[in-house]
Length: 178
Image (cartoon, rainbow, N blue to C red; front, side):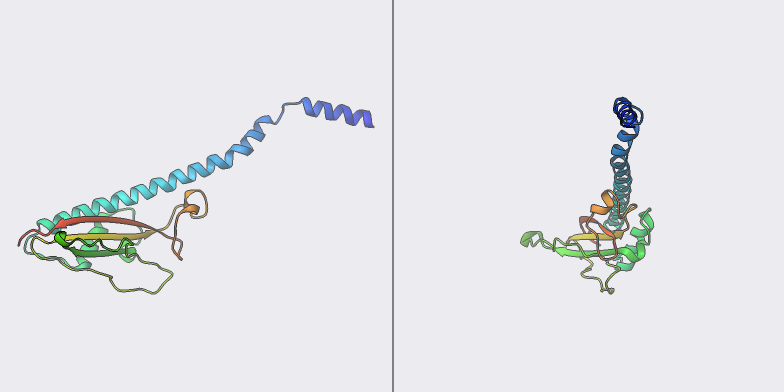
């Protein structure tokens, strides 16, 4: 009995069957995590570039639209119409427009005003339409869900109480004379 067991153990030790399976089991989770992170990063980049593009287009319309002073809801609607791939944009987008004096510079609050579905709705923090030749800073913050919330990059992102992360876009412009 012991001789048969020893022979079996020697053959088992010399056998190379299943070596590829062990390598697969070790590397597959890492490859799967990198793939999920790449998908998440791709969607983050796509959403952020769409938000940036929509902000640029809307700010260009504001700058060149002499004689008109679009209000918060109009600007928000225009951004959401132009920014594709952002789910529930009208409810998750938050805008700020701040008048800044370039001669007496005071930096705006570094934390963007964002929505949080896990908290009560709060009013717009700061939105002031500029006058002729005034420097304005507009910030948009939108909250979105990660594709893979509990795996790879999505698990390591800074999220709010509802499990969403923030995308922030800022731009500055000078209001053209009317």
